[in-house]
Length: 124
Image (cartoon, helix red, strand yellow):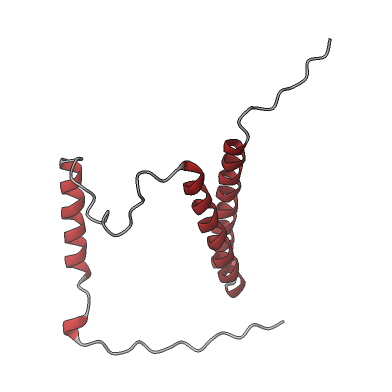
């Protein structure tokens, strides 16, 4: 089965005033990281963007992590289907890591659900 590749889209012309200066961004990032290393009590500069409430219970956190990894699994599988060669191998490796992490989290959830460890019968 022959795969058809989509036609590359041309990059829209962006006015020079709207282009991102990566040098300035890199310098700002270095300043933020350096400040954080000098004073560990200083809040992370991006912590206000993504936060997790402190009172969220462990099963809920693990459940959301498992769902996130399941989504990552689907996305990387779809991506690998569109790639060839070493790029496909990298996407499949990422997909396998996502599956492994999802399995580990699901086992942790199972362990939280079973309050007592399994008892092995003793033979006399």
